[in-house]
Image (cartoon, rainbow, N blue to C red):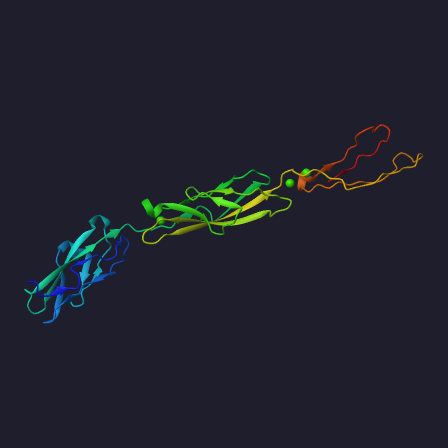
Amino acid sequence: MLLSRFSAEYYNPEPLSNWTAPHTYLIQIKAFYLHSSLNYSIQEETAKEYFDIDPSSGIIRTKKLLNIEDFPRNVTVKAADSQRAWIYSEAIVHVTVISADQYAPVFNNSLKKVTVKEEQSVPTFIAQVQATDNDPGKNGFLTYSILNQNHFFAIDATNGMVFATTTFDFENGTHEFEIFISAEDDGIPHKKQGYVTLVIQVLDVNDCEPVFPPHGDMYVGESAPIGTVIGQITATDEDSGDNAFIVYSLFGNVNVLYHIICVIS
Ligand SMILES: [Ca+2]
Ligand SMILES: [Ca+2]
Ligand SMILES: [Ca+2]
């Protein structure tokens, strides 16, 4: 008999995940019936293994972890007159279960240090960062991005390869950059992230020549003894370290005026 009426005869609740904890709320079934109180029950024995229904409120909860192979499935709910069980109505609850994201992406190290030379043409490959995710499918499909985005670096979202998008100048620019990179899965129902910090050190190359400051003529008396210092002239080189190490030597007719060659580092 169909004397009671459900508020909907076909229920389609939000999907559950295969990691849904037991006793999780699924949906509340309501039938309208004025003559007496109602008694709700689940009909299929196999559905009863997974779900409990509160006989008076119609609230359905899970009983145990849901095996994804057993879903989707229709669960039949019966609302019967609590006094006269032959007066009842039935509704269908369509239950779907999705494979849920369990693991977050993980990088081998939380910090990675790399170097890049100045004066490189762009885009310059810097490093490749890679995370692993133990979930299959979408739950383990990773997308990489730079969180503190700037115009110096770019990352390939699919493989984690980092490139410099600008040419660095060691002499006039920053020597070290720090970028924060995330790997995000395409998880259901929620995406998970892992993080790595990439420290990029800019290395000097020998791109600057030694430069002498403007200087005037030097004079020495014609009878000055050998070994007389007639002046000093110092060049500068904007590079660093060995790239700025200067060796001085004389050109031209050095036999006429022989000088000590000074080596200044
Ligand atoms: Ca995952
Ligand atoms: Ca130099
Ligand atoms: Ca340089």
